[in-house]
Length: 197
Image 1 (spheres, rainbow, N blue to C red):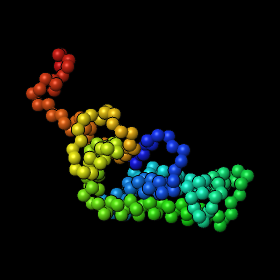
Image 2: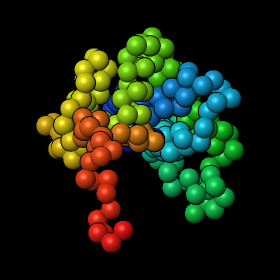
Image 3: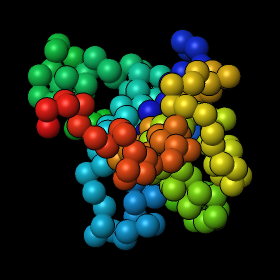
Image 4: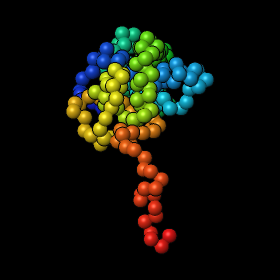
């Protein structure tokens, strides 16, 4: 799952930013398909798909970012989309057009993500390994991992900059655990703490 933490609370988003955010969000599914094929896709990207869908719907239905839908807030009618009209009716033709516009934004975002990943296979592999190894990477850490640098420090460190974070599951190692040595078998830490044992 990809999680983007805002640099600050934002009240404004441009259309190109929304499209970029959809592409970033769809990168998890694109990565799974590239790595494992269509049949190897897991349920892991479900949250990403929900986020991308919600953003695309807001862009089309609320923010007037679709020329075909226009500058009408159809968010009130969204309940009607699911069955209850809430006093606002949308024609079947408009519903279909909304679906097409939302799907187009998501499909374009997916294709952008797939193209970026396939055009940059070395960086893609480094990022995938970094996420598998550390689970959570800040924006600065992503830059380092993609550049082939080794991360140091502790997981609980506060990042120096307020850039977005990316989270992926499952977690396999922390930064601190990677740098620690395993205790020797004869080490005192292996012995039971209860002297009667």
